[in-house]
Image (cartoon, rainbow, N blue to C red; front, side, top):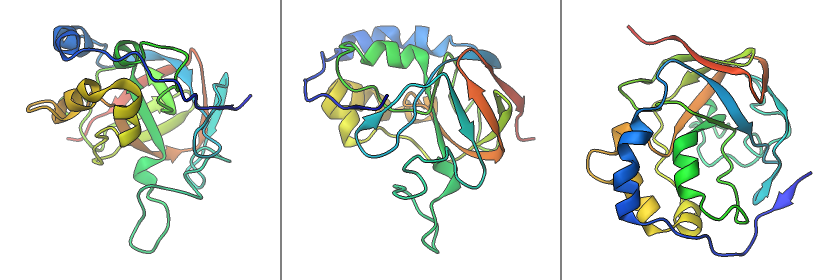
Length: 194
């Protein structure tokens, strides 16, 4: 069932709590974890959390807004495949999403994974259920909605000096092999560049 985002204001996390929690976030698994949950976004401000998602090279998540309304396009106007799938670290979600009555961030996959550049450089190939993803070099800095929902401290934490390479807002990926991802499936590093 699709749900619209609530208008309620989120309970905001403090900068101090975020700073104190950074070591815990960075201690996430490096190579292998399980998919905690999935999100399907049919249109703007809509979220569904199915048990599984189909991932395809041609359409991203079929029926999702990426194909119709991408926020990043190729020079010829087609949607950029580097943003087909977003993966948010579970430890970050649990920090910032204090009030569970407000909107979920909307990332395709949430998993307990270290998403830093050092751990998952662009070009890293991930097994996501039966699909394969390639980590892109597009930085996910947290949109205006991230700040509105979770507070200025949560937004500033993403882009603070030294933090962009930690990719606290998660990673963006292109689908390179069709497949199905389900809750509880493995998310694992298959190869890193070099």
